[in-house]
Image 1 (cartoon, rainbow, N blue to C red):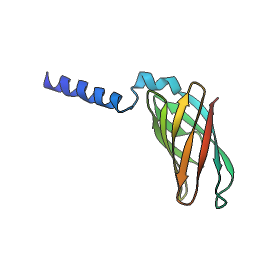
Image 2: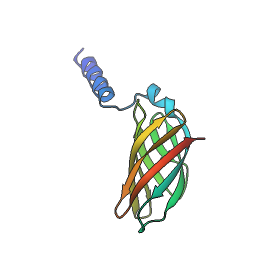
Image 3: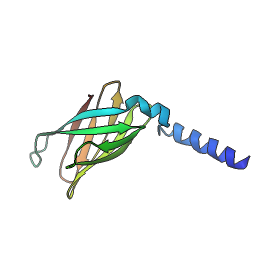
Image 4: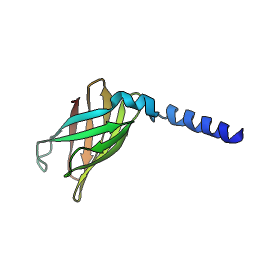
Length: 117
């Protein structure tokens, strides 16, 4: 009985903190095209990357960029993109078939928008 209570408490805490349950996260499942823009002269002005979401987990659809992260039940998303030694962290929100947010890296920052394919 104690083990069951711990499981229920843990699941409730994760939900309250915004982490998606598998069925809720499936709302955002699919392939997404992400447009990345930077306002910094030190970085390229724009790029595009394809990511996939499955049960709330973010993964890359490309061999050149590694993507990881999570989508919460309400659509809040946290993503890390990396290629070679470069790494960027983004946060934002997905809603239906689109989303937007901000990102930052060592010398750059900017915004992103996403469309579900």
